[in-house]
Image 1 (cartoon, rainbow over the protein chains, first blue to last red):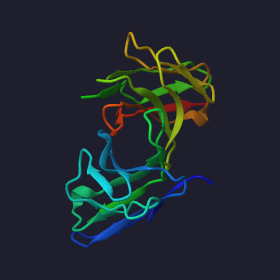
Image 2: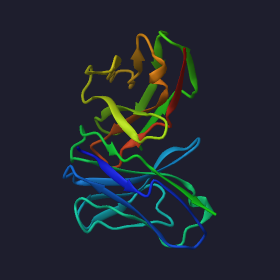
Image 3: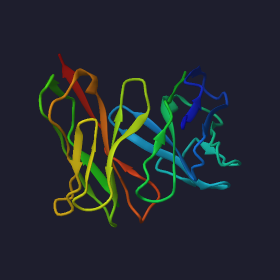
Length: 113
Length: 112
């Protein structure tokens, strides 16, 4: 089944404790992205990647890191999480081309205490 | 820059009512347009798309027509069901930028 898989789905942690949210897609998509979703603010893009070893900042990159060492994986790293990073996070992937839709994972709900 | 404006919700309807969710956009290029749906506890999934002017996207009884002259892509359904309760996002991909642009989402609540 074609899918984008995120882990964990839920995480409660404390300020400053490094964490990684994994994302994997099995559709051989070139493009991958991370978003956060907050009430009243909609979806905001954190980082995106156009291919292996090619990443760039989205609208809200501060406090996050990413890497793209393999085409299928695009982990999101919070080196020193803070409470304002409490949010619902989505990973997405798509083929190149403007007419291609995004395929989203089911989301990761992070709570930073 | 590009932008997508959706009507604010929540939109509350009775079952079998007619639905319209308005979406207008601004773009520097000639974008492709999308509607995504997010059911509770899930990620967004593609509902329908249109890639050129006057194209009509349709799926699951929902329709939207790409109107270049009014820069709009309104979502419609003739008879909603309780199972349509979800958040709906209008979005565009513009050739000038990889970063897709999303509207803020419109919550739809359908009562029996």
